[in-house]
Length: 438
Image (tube, rainbow, N blue to C red; front, top):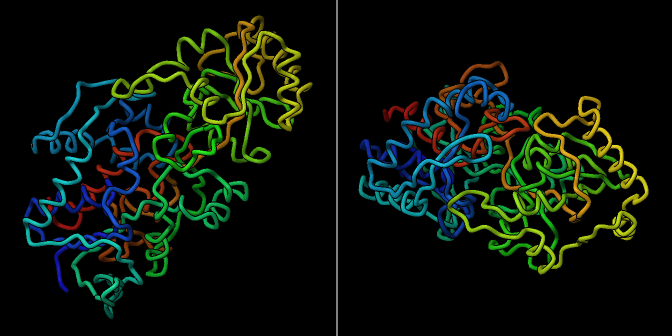
């Protein structure tokens, strides 16, 4: 089978690349391992947001400045494209440390599929990609795919890897992030297991092994975990306003950097878990508020407890110590660390260790506490690319014919975060443009 463009993966990055190219006349073949389209994007809230400036991208994304700039510079074009096709777009909203819009994500994905099919292309499901194909000069010219009907070689002028990262592989998580990451809870599609990275490295591309970052949230455990509807309800997004204590009873990070960053840092603590502690002010202001305006507010403590979470609500420090000790934490040290924080926040915030760069307010004595665990949504470490989404070889030169987008491309974010859907669509568009479909 021959086509103009082969896209491996049908999530936000892959379908955006495919739709963009097909709209401009490309015959595109999209190969999807799962039984349906969408990847982890369909589990999201559908908000396409990012940082509002290069300085904020650097501060909060913490990745390669050049790749971060691709997200910033391509974002307006991506939104204009979405609007031009009649996709519903909300008014602008603040999201974390950035700004964006809620879109009808399903409409966008399905419209991309329709454009592919209208241009004479195909999307095939339940099909794995065995290997990339190269010509005698070393250019990637397509891939060998395997489905229930047998093996099919797809020949294409350019191939885009967009399989969604490696968060679905316990072994790769342990190998590339930390041994504790092997047992992370998964708040993602289960089939993104590093296929794109494997294909790219086997063909001569380089994996960005120094980037151990990922996007995720601190969550409470529940017998219902794994049901998609709990991914949001059990996520404790307000940890950036709270305090976090490891099993030894110490604070271990600047919590105000963000819940996603707290999630990353918790992986490196004993058993990748913590106690998150907050007060009545935080409960009323943040723990029961909208995460984004497009989602209904939830009482996160109440939802956690109702679904099997480990928690306590108390005004008694002795009861807080007892709770922590009963759950395998050093309760006495936790109470001591809390007292040290209260003193520092009251009389000397500049001496707090770890610091609190955004805010340092004493807790009011009406405590809410939950045991939380790191959960992963998608990984940041992928194939090394240039600003045109071209996969790079170990000597820094381009691997001809091969591009990567979304979580298969590593480096735009480090341990920070500035929007997953924005990352996917901007690099999907960029990859399609580099492939010749301007």
